Amino acid sequence: MANVLIVDDSSTERKILISYFQELGITVNTAESGEEALEKLAGSTPDLIILDVVLPGKSGFEVCREIKSGGNTAKIPIIICSTKGSEMDKFWGMKQGADAYIPKPVDKEELFSTVKKLIR
Image 1 (cartoon, rainbow, N blue to C red):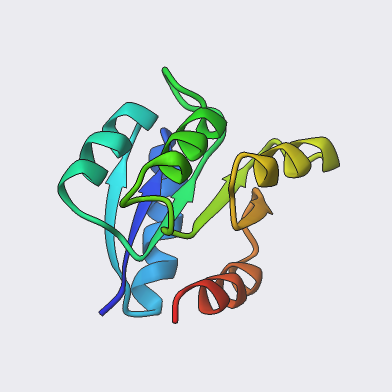
Image 2 (cartoon, rainbow, N blue to C red; image 1 turned 120 degrees about the vertical axis):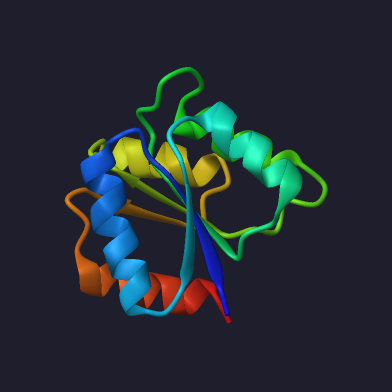
């Protein structure tokens, strides 16, 4: 069974995303900050990471760069989900190594199709 790490400081957003992934039968872990996410990655490797941009401490862009530059985490697909949805934000997110960029509020069908492409 696949597992996902959701990194978002909003409990409402986490609850929504958790319910979506439970519909797909995917196990969910969560982190409320970039630092917490990086700590969790030291202990386990998810099949996918959902990453907000606006986080306390390190931004999602910084966390994405760190994950993609790490030896055993570089291949983990990352979907950035953020209210920062301008074309420049999307461009910058992809430059940091994100595999997809979905603006909030998250469209469930877009999320599902993106997840299915990234998790085999």
